[in-house]
Image 1: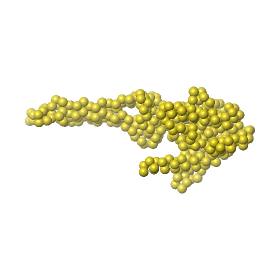
Image 2: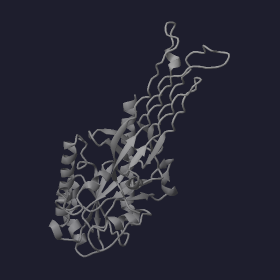
Image 3: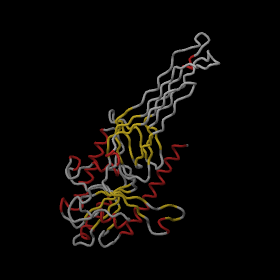
Image 4: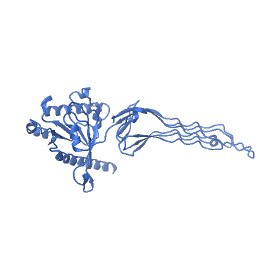
Amino acid sequence: MQFVDEVKISARSGKGGDGLVAFLREKYRPYGGPAGGDGGKGGDVVFVADPNLNTLLDFRFTRNWFAEDGGKGQSKNKSGSDAEDLIVRVPPGTVIYDDDTGEKLRDLMTGGERWIGLPGGKGGRGNQHFATPKNQAPKKAEPGGPAVEKTLRLELKLLADVGLVGYPNAGKSTLLSRVSAARPKIADYPFTTLVPNLGVVRPKGRKGKEAGVDRTFVVADIPGLIEGAHEGVGLGIRFLRHVERTALFLHVIDFADPADGGPWGRFEKVQAELIAYDAMRAQEGDHSPIASRPALLAANKMDLPDAQENLKALRKKFEKRGIFVVAISGVTGFGIDELIEALSSRVEEARRSRLSVQLEERS
């Protein structure tokens, strides 16, 4: 399935129906008075986060989302019909922007969350509302309220607890297939991961639950980063938006490969790209850096020559940077259980911290 993470659409709410100028004309009521009904309300454009969706692909084929107009007022004081709301379903994690101003309008993070993006126009009042003792036959009615029309940019940011970052062919996709049921494309050439992949990890023990706490967590694997990615080298860094929400990063590094300065050199270059990405976001007004987020390191390919020697030489250097190192082999499965437990404990810590912050904000 094609992955689509950014689209532009045209959206318009419904116009309110016009009120009517009418008078009651009946055989036995020659002076029945004003009887123009009110117009109906125009339809709202309502965005709903649907947990069954994980891509914006549908919007590539449907660019115009227009709600119906309200019905016009009718005679004998009958109101026009209200238009039905137009429901626009998007994946959780969709951020909606006004494309003309760049303003962030809404961030739909939770499944089932609803947002009236473009309210429909109110129905206009019929002439029955304008009768007075001095003017008992008003020929005045209100037009319906105007529709709201905007060009919107929808941007999908995946909701994951852990973000996998690293060079192409570091073994991220293989690792994701080891720790979850995800089956990303795996090959022995660079940039086999062309779109982000998600996997749900269930630590061992009662299907991932202990003492009533759900220990499952979601891992996002994004396309590999290389030096100069922020300038468009390789696949660039636009996919980093999908790890903006993660609680922590897992750097996956091939410890058997001496290229690009070896494991330490490649780690430094990936960090430089994260810092460059933060600088770009800061220019757009987002000052929540991702380069300084908590991180672990998966020292991968321990089944290959030189990997263990490199680990002995570099472990303390990484840990001085506050980065916990776990030796693994995505191919053989060595160290995978230890890595899952290390990630799980840190995800739980992040969730407790986030919950305490939310409770403080409410109090």
